[in-house]
Length: 68
Image 1 (tube, helix red, strand yellow):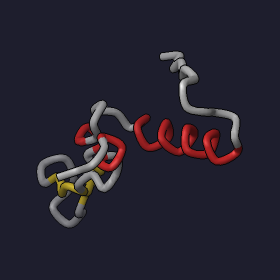
Image 2 (cartoon, one colour):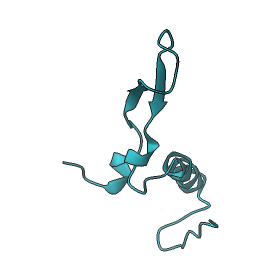
Image 3 (cartoon, helix red, strand yellow):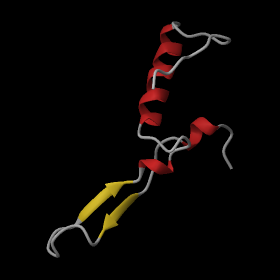
Image 4 (cartoon, helix red, strand yellow):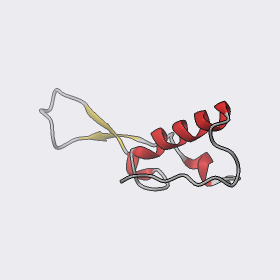
């Protein structure tokens, strides 16, 4: 059980892909789609927000607008 959706960001699984590389090659991918917004951007976004909060640039009640 998580206290916040933020706690679920990161720690995504690393998965071995068996059919896309020659037999002697072990290919692994990071499954970022397992993040809450199914995006690789989740890690970056939380890092930027937490840093802005730490610096005092972002305070409770303010709005964050994401451009994509």
